[in-house]
Length: 234
Image 1 (cartoon, rainbow, N blue to C red):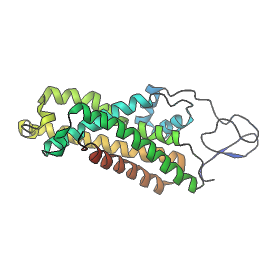
Image 2: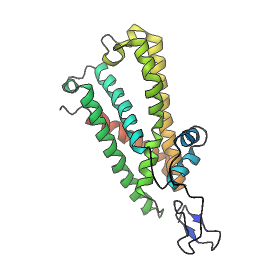
Image 3: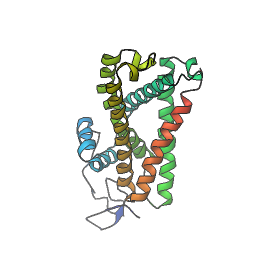
């Protein structure tokens, strides 16, 4: 077993998510009933591996639905802006509400599909895991998108009004410097999500190469899939 917790009583190996030893039933760690949102957010900033461990240990993956909805809104809005900026004719079939609804459904589906795929890969490597832990890790790894939704969106509206969303005219012509600054911040926060994905998978696998591969792959698959799924005319 490549990643395990050793029981202090009988020295047996157990999965990292285990609370009790499967051999002597002794406690392996402190029980974590629920995820403390604010503490976990703080750890995502200061100690991503600690945050990932807490998410794995938590018996109830609370706040996941709330986070997924906010993340879906932000990512869908970003694609809405992107499609409008390039004048995508197929995209014009959908309105903003439909785009957000598609985004929420698509993101939920992608998270759970990817969770089962990577759970299977980890088990092939001899690493016990639970798909629900991977789903929670993916969701919390995209938390930077929630930050940009809450902080950047009001700034975008204050600076550009609806021009930021319609690109008619483009905000890059209206206020060039602020537009590029905001775009760079968006890219940086997306990059932060990739790093969080890598740290999260590393906590489970303890394999740096596999963690980098998984982090980048999950991120690309989610964004590319949303890019195509959100253009489905309804």
